[in-house]
Length: 366
Ligand SMILES: *Cc1c(COP(=O)(O)O)cnc(C)c1O
Image (cartoon, rainbow, N blue to C red; front, side, top):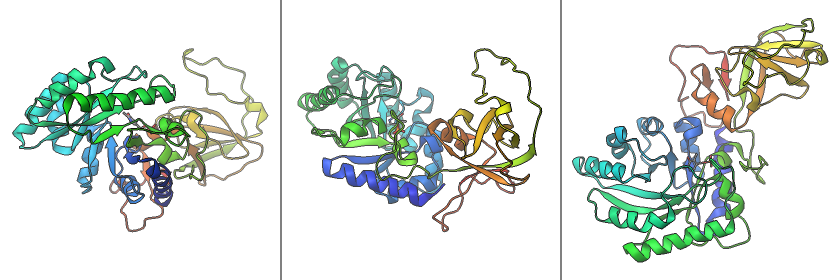
């Protein structure tokens, strides 16, 4: 992973959104709360961090990070103590959970911040807009918690980008909640990377003062189109795998996949490629269809531990490396895979954060 590119991507977004009154919260869930990446986001100007899982937040805290960290998935009831312990603020949609957070916070002599997640059409998590004011009033009466803001989420579940009118409705809700509850809402978080076309578009961004950005910072792309965002690095991450066999194989007769519901991973007929390479990487390590093949090579297929690649002529020898770019799913999967070793570029002073001690791995994420 190239930390300078992560920092650069964050800087680019911070400088474009700043004039519109929008701050950037860096989302670390796709990199499992990797502290070096998190620090690169902060160095690039992110005001705080957010993650969906408390284990990832714990990883950030264990690395000594003291910046504000927000839990952006509504907490599990079974984890409220940890949520209050590790996060200043969490996104919430259930009053039973908020009550449990409040009790946990009182026990620790803390006040835990609550951002209410509003359902604006994505149909995943969220409080219905018509119930929001009552919900907010209820939070206002509780000890141990403080209402810090409201948040919306788009495109995650539905795949639909937010419209100008949905965003205007969301801003109206912020005003309504302030009318009902009194205090100024510190955070009005409009959404994720999928909100960038809206946020950088022509119309006013209203009350929205925060976006939670993961994919755009990490991969430099706009999630819905997959297009590169102007001036951003799309190659901050590279997946490196070792070649373990180079051979021509007889053309096999076509075979049906064993599990018919599973997409057969046969992108080209093997006969189209005269040489094959086998790499020590498979479904256990990443989301294979999310890899971009190097020029001159084609994906023939994969199993749990092998990747079969076709080339017109042998590109590599046994023991050499091949490099791949990843999409979001491939990155997320690779970062969570136990056999992937993380190597950092651009920050020699930072210690690799996920190097299993005393172990040599054959895959490297650079
Ligand atoms: C994952 C997530 C984000 C960040 O999404 P990106 O598309 O990576 O920017 C923001 N908000 C919530 C609630 C999320 O779960």
